[in-house]
Length: 67
Image (tube, rainbow, N blue to C red; front, side, top):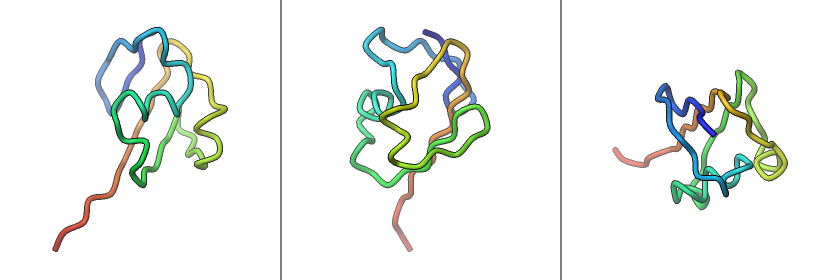
C-alpha cells in the first residue's frame, strides 16, 4: 500500500495494516507521538484499531527533549 507519510509518498510492507504497525515498523512505538490520519488526530487507543488504506495521509510527530 502506498501512503503519504509526513509529506512523502512511501510504500508500506504488506504486514503494515494499522497505525500501530507503522509505529512499530519505524521503531517509534515506544516514543510519545501524536498521529494524524487524513486530518484527524488519533488517540493512543485508536492506533491499534485504525486500519490504513491506500493513499492515506499520515502525519507523525514525536517529541525530542533538549535545552
